[in-house]
Length: 463
Image (tube, rainbow, N blue to C red; front, side):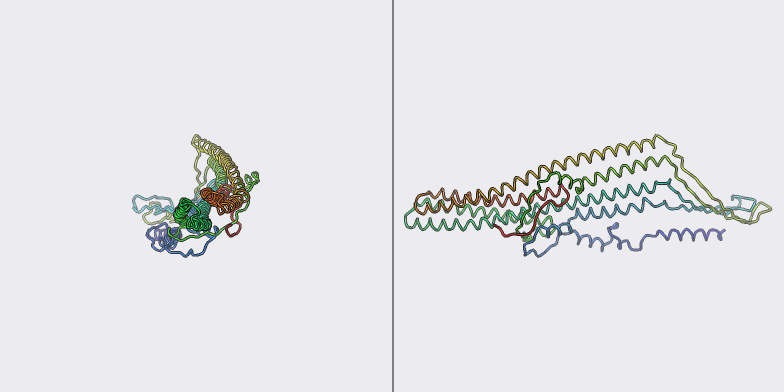
């Protein structure tokens, strides 16, 4: 009997060896085994914030965006999810593993007897073949799921890009506000020096000097607040780029492009680019393929096999035993008998198609609403900036010069002079705030549309 068992065992070992896992699981990414120290270390180095980095020079927004996309754990996780989903396709389109079955009959008095002799053992090899089209449709479902995973990756990337830009423009505002306040503080120093000289010459009352000093201290208090906000804004941007929270980050001045006004073009771009919409559309296609697969379940799968039975003359009961082995072929099918289950599978797919279609409509409507709101907001901010730069600020500067001249000649009150100075400083800060808000609004608009609609276009020196 062993002459038949040994070859069979060798065949099983040979087939099993084809599917032997790699000797070192730590050679594979992503890590499936947490006991692999090299892989875990590599992953930690990829996602952990850098302890010390040199940010001595001012950087533009693209630098920070690139850094964040390389390090953000949500983006890295979405990348791995997309890679994992792509590996599903070859799995669902492959045939099931063939089945090798061995049957022993070791007891001589309790083994099958044939005319050719006594049966010792049987070996059966079978393979299941799905009905025509099932593997193809499974692959199409998996392909759409991969596309959905890629869309989710794009969503994660756009979310990070928006967060970086929001933090970037907030840091820009605090930097610019400190520069503006320090520059306007020089004007106040000139006023204070003049008032102090006039007071020492007994040409103005002491209250003029005290009011001017109070205004000076208010500016100093504003600078303290702005420097605190600067550190907070730096920490927020550092969080987005996964670096040390106390990093001394600096941003470059920037020019903002005109806010887009062609709403229809933005709508068309969003339909084409927005990952949320793309994911919904791929979901509709996936559910349609799932419906096709559910319908294919009405058709049976086929299983074919080949068998071999070892026959021996030893202890055979038949007088004509010749020891010829038996060879057999088998064909089988499953019977799709339970029609209620099959009908429910098709109905489920129909409902999911309708659900996905409605979600496409909901996401599209929500996208259009956000585009409209953000476009109106960006246009209004542009108009405000234009109004301040070409109207309000020039008039305020002229008024301040005029009041200073009148105060020199004793024709104006110091409080009017200080009030106009304070308003001019506020106007300058308001322009910086509006510039940052415009950048943030355009960043959010790009996030909604899914592609570039404006943004930074170079650098400039502060006005």
